[in-house]
Image (tube, rainbow, N blue to C red; front, top):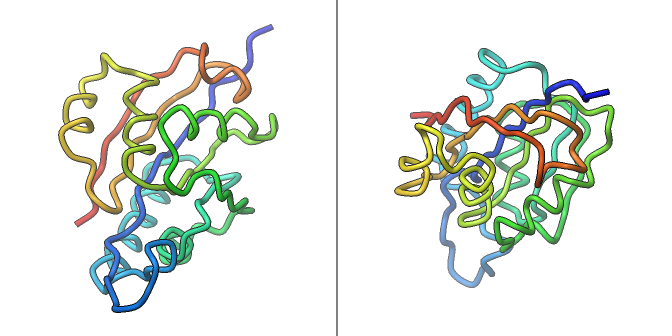
Amino acid sequence: MAEASRVLILMRHGKSAYPDDVSDHERPLARRGLREAALAGDWIRATQPPVDAVLCSTSTRTRLTLDATGVDAPAEFSDLLYGATPAQVLHEIAGTKPDVTTLLVIGHDPGIPGAATALDPRSRYADRISDKFPTSALATLTIEGDWSSIHSAGAALTAFHIPR
């Protein structure tokens, strides 16, 4: 029996600040990053099913992005998403619990945009995403089947949104 379809929301962290003497992992969000991440959260609530779970990089800027979205779902923080390749992002998603139907993943470039285009390379959004996936941008996909089979499940990129 086929699993029900799932919604995957891939988000790049908000625009970060570059304070002196702060490591890349610990960089906070810039004011613009906070504003645009909040707009991204508004868009998620207005256009997507309720988020059941969040998978988030451990970096300060991704954690602050999650906070700014206002998405209130159980979150798991993964060191592996920091600096992840698209394949590593997909591997992390594959470990999502089966009862999650809508998953928000907050990470970094190139892992987040690469994962989106890897799942649906022929989408009408694929060229735009490959060209530029700005901070706070979101790609949404419909996944047919279970998270554990994300590599082989059918996927359709259904939206690409840049909150401004």
